[in-house]
Length: 386
Image (cartoon, rainbow, N blue to C red):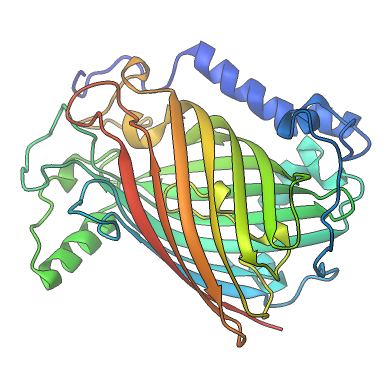
């Protein structure tokens, strides 16, 4: 790894072309040419669930035909200390607050208007058969640290300090007949602000843990704007039943994370909320970008999944335009990453729900101290409304 004078902040043209091609496949002209969301609409639709034919669940749960003014809110806390063992490194913590409904769409800080412009330009707003629509807004912060946080000097063989504070708006369009949902998300944020380090060290002071001394060397130290746009197509699979949901998801994004991914996910148990309102596969570090379930019925279920990721660019490792003391070149990061997660949700009859998730992924770096798998836990407190 080299130091601050690197000749390439971004991945090679080949990697960028690959990622942009994936986005084009997901959200480009092919969408406006395809007149329907049926499995014959495009190769992408068939790729999302290869070899499987259309089949509806045995008993469809009620689908909200009209979006509520206030659907739900959710508070999420991620921390690598929420897993067995002693960990305080890599993706070290995240904190976010999210809301759904028309109020979330119309909120003063909402990004729904520019998100709508992008969706319209890409043809997403003209998808035929999408009779159910939803909106969400999220704000949060998360941070990354190396292993030896007590050292104040730059650590060139470990992952760099990095952080982002962000605002994010998401849309979902659902065709209940075809069991297909399209999600789009626009996120605006700032890298390199002092707030993430101040929060971490403030908490560490209260609990008597060691201070993280290297935040002055974080990616884009001093602050730099960043953004990401993502689009995903989800479809339930024929194996789904009253107490089991299995779905495949194809997704692509451009921005601080430029990637294409495929995931297979499930939830099993007492299911009462619509399948498209549970989307842990859309999580990116602390950024949730998904709709909180709006059913007030008592439900409880296990959920999990796996994802295969082709990542062309990661600003939290490679930096952006601003100089960073520690950052990695494209040929020093792993562009293929595997992810997995397993969680449990219990929803009370009064609309409150509690979830825990264990999430991890393979190493993002090719060598050095930072070449290690990443694991963290998360807690989600949520409330749904009639």
